[in-house]
Image (cartoon, rainbow, N blue to C red; front, side, top):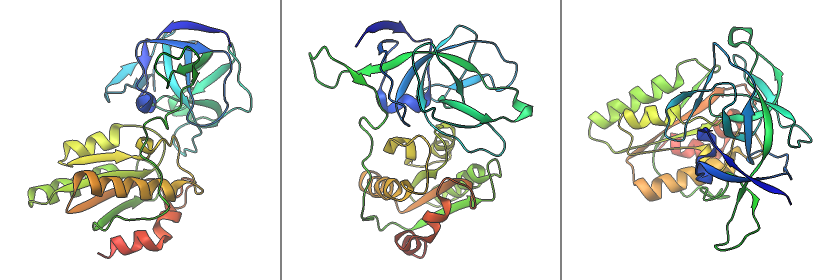
Length: 279
């Protein structure tokens, strides 16, 4: 596999598990599946929705010519861009930046208020070298170092779920205020975002409100939640949160709407989750 060295100008928060440096090696063989990390070059400037969230949570402008590391993924958004992972991708192809977290894919529907999404030319698959001293890289994926999914919910901490009708309906604000109130009352609060599309902003807001530890599905190696995988990831996150933070209570935000496509209903109907809600 041919490789070349690339210098990254922007490293999106969706890649955080991959722990990328500014200098990376990219290869020509691209796996067209959610979670794989690509290096792309931004092809034009925009006046709105023109930033990307860095791994530290800061919003950074994207400009024509910037080389960005992002993650392949899908998005089903009512008020943003919707998109999917293309069936085939090769270096030189053009993909779109679908959200502020740096999720990359083929845009299938756009919001006119945000303008067209960034076009980005694919430079290659960012390579990971999991074996020290090994010169053959493998395509980097955000499941590296991720919190493992779980078939059994072992967490017994009382759970408060915050859900809403759609995106941008105030769920993160509500969750953060609940966390703030519980923390001021002397409780140790854990926080987690269980559904949605990769973006650190909401969990950082929960940390700012006083959460001892705030996680999201991206920490479990998931770019965009869906019905078939949301429950094992949620179980793994809740188990990890209880084990690591030992909170008195957990506040969980369910991104998107109850009737959306991110698996919110699956979580609300799960018997184990219901048991924690009633604790």
